[in-house]
Image 1 (cartoon, one colour):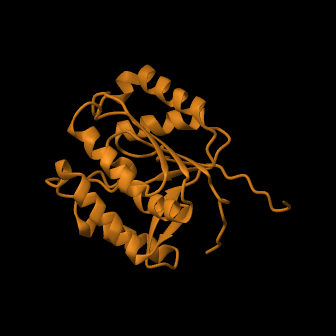
Image 2 (cartoon, helix red, strand yellow):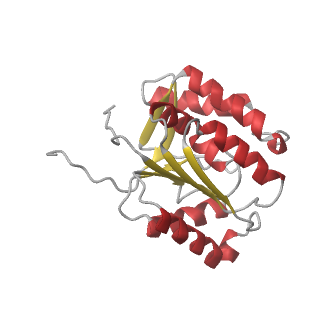
Length: 215
């Protein structure tokens, strides 16, 4: 396992198709980063769930997952499960986000995610953020679409436990789902930890990575 640093990111973009996607896929990474970089700017965009209880859940959750950060969150009202049918609205939102920030790191869904909303947003990100480090997070689900990630962020046991606690605390609307529980979240984190010689980890796909070995 080789350890490469992404530098010291001062600006982060995090996007999700639904409220809770960012926290499930990269909540531990955000906690780790924000604790290490007080005042880091986090521009977050969620395509659906705006204007109701889900948006309130998301705002409270991301505030907790980004302690001490300059968090700027936008939650849209696109219908859940219909992002491909609202392509122009989604594209405009991503392009508007791109115009507001020049991030050092982007957290986004995987382009091969089985959920059409996740996959659609991921494809939009590849055109809007061409020259950035984009880490594509994974979300466990019924479809069984987990792959072989290429990048890992180790999580301390304290961060892993805190992630699970915050997920349970801030998203009561999701507690009825059969996959939304402590065992699922910690189990996947433990597997990814094994793969990178850590106790726990979050894993990501990286499409392109430009090296600066002589810098």
